[in-house]
Length: 499
Image 1 (tube, rainbow, N blue to C red):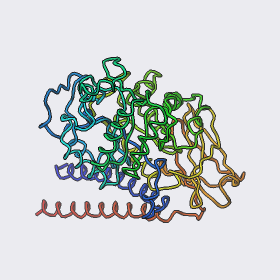
Image 2: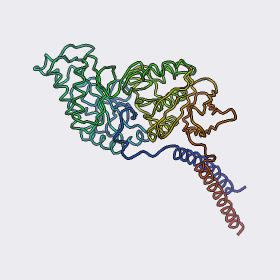
Image 3: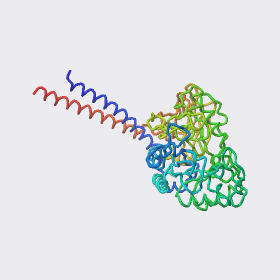
Image 4: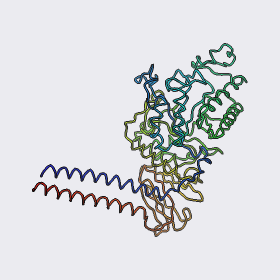
């Protein structure tokens, strides 16, 4: 055999791999096209925070895009600044955007003595390790152009003793106490209240951000927090305002630290008690839902302690959270199964060279959510919830979805009825491309392997899926054409060799 034969065979192997990838892409694309309605142009203007998804990161730990602000950095010491900056955020805009997040929460960015912004020294100047105010505004504008809003933390309390107010001799009566190396303001002092409100509203008026997360609010009464929220809304009506602490104030979304514990305990292993699944949804407001936070240990840490495979556990958690009502909040590094028990170990520098399987999974699930208003704000009804086996629906006047979560150790079957789905329907699975039709017992037998999530759209049963058949036919046409070209080239080469 000649080298030409080996080359031809190598080309065949490579092309077969390409054909497989093309087929999968085309088939998924046709499934999405046939399953998802086109968003209306006016939909963005009517969105609420319940329809958003938040990617929560720390500027210093994400990506170092510029060396000009790398002073006093040490990537080997997790307690020091690592070099992440606004330029890095702009460089990785597509990475975040392609995962489908609509809000990017970047933590506190005011001048600070700690990499995570926990020791602010000002409410007006930007931390120089992160970049300039012009670079920050450039990031805000770049993300907004891609339909993503930037959210920033504003700490009402617990600042550095070197904070510009704390060092002002005329403001010493503003300080209520000094604990754990931090200064606590007297939040009952009218001057302090007015100064905080002015600082927050000045910031919002200066930069076109889409959200503020008020932090360190434990020492503030509800009436004062409501005044801050009202002033911020007056400064920018469309601004989302949330907190990472429980509060009765008029935030756009509620928060409970128990929420992360509930979902962490449900998804860290199979066959777990899932009876508390609905607890976060008892209030009138949208709720923030997550499996961990930047202040706690990582979900990966919990699942690894259960001797489970974290990426699979994260797929179960992400596939469910993005389909539930509420506002999903995902910490940076979740998509690469970042580990850690306590900060700073939980605040590792993001590694962009890791496997992308989980990233692709998040992209697929969020693509569905972002293109379907029903999956974001449709009516929610639980059909089954038994120790990890969860089936629920999201419904609107336009469409109906069935989400099955098999977070158990074995294959599960759930029989759905025409009363639940309607007459003459079928289930079109999006993630695993399974189709379910009514059987001779007049039920829809939905069967799912262990540790899997499937998202089904309820459609009219019209027989063959024409887009699917077209895509499949196109793949075969391409493949046959390639084989023809290979054979023809082989003949020409043999003729040349004979000559």
